Image (spheres, helix red, strand yellow):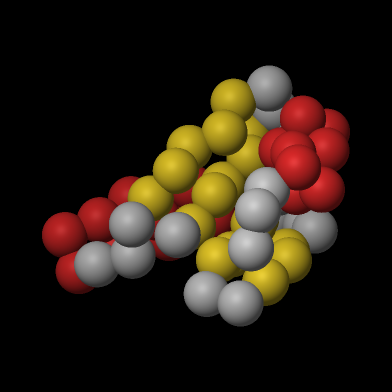
Length: 62
């Protein structure tokens, strides 16, 4: 899964070629660089900052 935070919104994507352009567009910041922070845990990628998104990481079961 790929989670992309933009402000208070978090979008969830399943990585596939169907959503590639949308994921890349959302993952890039205004400067054209990848949004920060970027965190990869196993097969899940978290891009951008949203406090609720990162707070939920401690509550997920592995």
